[in-house]
Amino acid sequence: MIPIQLQLMPAPPEPIAFAANLEHLAALIEQLEAKGVAVKFIEMPTDPSLVGSVYAQATLIALQDRFPPERYPRLAIFNDAVYQTMDGLHLAPHDAILAAHAIRDALARFDPAP
Image 1 (cartoon, rainbow, N blue to C red):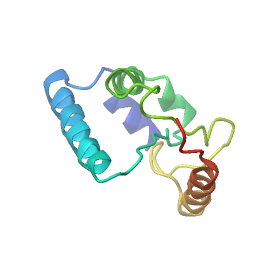
Image 2 (image 1 turned 180 degrees about the vertical axis):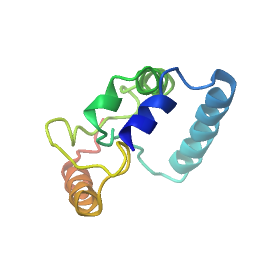
Image 3 (image 1 turned 45 degrees about the vertical axis):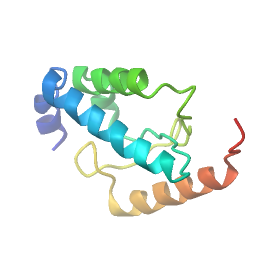
Protein backbone atom coordinates (compact mmCIF):
# COMPACT_ATOMS: atom_id res chain seq x y z
CA MET A 1 0.00 0.00 0.00
CA ILE A 2 2.87 2.40 0.68
CA PRO A 3 4.01 2.35 -2.97
CA ILE A 4 0.46 3.37 -3.93
CA GLN A 5 0.56 6.25 -1.44
CA LEU A 6 3.90 7.36 -2.91
CA GLN A 7 2.34 7.38 -6.38
CA LEU A 8 -0.49 9.58 -5.09
CA MET A 9 1.86 12.05 -3.36
CA PRO A 10 4.47 13.16 -5.94
CA ALA A 11 3.06 16.68 -6.19
CA PRO A 12 1.58 19.19 -3.76
CA PRO A 13 -2.18 19.17 -3.15
CA GLU A 14 -4.37 20.78 -5.79
CA PRO A 15 -4.21 24.46 -4.74
CA ILE A 16 -7.83 25.60 -5.09
CA ALA A 17 -9.41 22.62 -3.34
CA PHE A 18 -6.70 22.58 -0.69
CA ALA A 19 -7.17 26.28 0.07
CA ALA A 20 -10.93 25.72 0.36
CA ASN A 21 -10.33 22.81 2.76
CA LEU A 22 -8.00 24.95 4.89
CA GLU A 23 -10.58 27.72 5.12
CA HIS A 24 -13.29 25.21 6.02
CA LEU A 25 -11.04 23.83 8.75
CA ALA A 26 -10.36 27.38 9.98
CA ALA A 27 -14.11 28.04 10.20
CA LEU A 28 -14.64 24.86 12.20
CA ILE A 29 -11.79 25.78 14.55
CA GLU A 30 -13.26 29.26 15.03
CA GLN A 31 -16.60 27.69 15.98
CA LEU A 32 -14.88 25.49 18.55
CA GLU A 33 -12.92 28.40 19.97
CA ALA A 34 -16.12 30.45 20.24
CA LYS A 35 -17.41 27.68 22.53
CA GLY A 36 -14.29 27.88 24.70
CA VAL A 37 -12.39 24.94 23.22
CA ALA A 38 -8.59 25.30 23.27
CA VAL A 39 -7.35 23.86 19.97
CA LYS A 40 -4.07 21.92 19.85
CA PHE A 41 -2.41 20.36 16.84
CA ILE A 42 -0.61 17.05 16.63
CA GLU A 43 1.17 15.42 13.75
CA MET A 44 0.13 11.80 13.53
CA PRO A 45 2.82 9.25 12.78
CA THR A 46 3.14 8.17 9.17
CA ASP A 47 5.55 5.89 7.38
CA PRO A 48 8.95 7.60 7.12
CA SER A 49 8.96 7.10 3.35
CA LEU A 50 5.91 9.38 3.08
CA VAL A 51 6.98 12.12 5.51
CA GLY A 52 9.39 13.66 3.01
CA SER A 53 7.02 13.54 0.05
CA VAL A 54 6.23 16.76 -1.78
CA TYR A 55 2.56 16.38 -0.85
CA ALA A 56 3.25 15.87 2.87
CA GLN A 57 5.76 18.72 3.07
CA ALA A 58 3.46 21.15 1.21
CA THR A 59 0.61 20.19 3.52
CA LEU A 60 2.71 20.69 6.64
CA ILE A 61 3.94 24.11 5.48
CA ALA A 62 0.44 25.25 4.57
CA LEU A 63 -0.94 24.15 7.94
CA GLN A 64 1.87 25.92 9.79
CA ASP A 65 1.25 29.10 7.78
CA ARG A 66 -2.53 29.06 8.27
CA PHE A 67 -2.45 27.88 11.88
CA PRO A 68 0.76 29.32 13.39
CA PRO A 69 2.24 27.46 16.36
CA GLU A 70 2.23 30.67 18.40
CA ARG A 71 -1.57 30.59 18.36
CA TYR A 72 -2.20 26.88 18.00
CA PRO A 73 0.21 24.85 20.16
CA ARG A 74 1.66 21.67 18.72
CA LEU A 75 1.81 18.70 21.04
CA ALA A 76 5.03 16.80 20.38
CA ILE A 77 3.83 13.27 20.98
CA PHE A 78 5.23 11.01 18.29
CA ASN A 79 8.66 12.50 17.55
CA ASP A 80 10.75 9.44 18.43
CA ALA A 81 8.14 6.72 18.50
CA VAL A 82 7.89 4.11 15.76
CA TYR A 83 4.37 3.08 14.85
CA GLN A 84 3.19 0.44 12.42
CA THR A 85 0.82 1.66 9.71
CA MET A 86 -1.57 -0.27 7.51
CA ASP A 87 -0.84 1.76 4.38
CA GLY A 88 1.69 4.39 5.39
CA LEU A 89 -0.97 6.73 6.79
CA HIS A 90 -3.44 4.78 8.92
CA LEU A 91 -2.15 3.19 12.11
CA ALA A 92 -2.45 -0.52 12.67
CA PRO A 93 -5.12 -1.29 15.30
CA HIS A 94 -2.76 -1.99 18.20
CA ASP A 95 -0.67 1.09 17.44
CA ALA A 96 -3.82 3.19 17.07
CA ILE A 97 -4.69 2.28 20.66
CA LEU A 98 -1.17 3.18 21.81
CA ALA A 99 -1.38 6.48 19.92
CA ALA A 100 -4.75 7.29 21.49
CA HIS A 101 -3.28 6.72 24.95
CA ALA A 102 -0.27 8.91 24.10
CA ILE A 103 -2.59 11.71 22.93
CA ARG A 104 -4.72 11.42 26.07
CA ASP A 105 -1.63 11.52 28.29
CA ALA A 106 -0.16 14.52 26.45
CA LEU A 107 -3.41 16.45 26.77
CA ALA A 108 -3.56 15.65 30.48
CA ARG A 109 -0.08 17.17 30.93
CA PHE A 110 -0.78 20.23 28.78
CA ASP A 111 -0.60 23.54 30.59
CA PRO A 112 -3.40 25.68 29.13
CA ALA A 113 -1.88 28.95 30.34
CA PRO A 114 -0.50 31.05 27.46
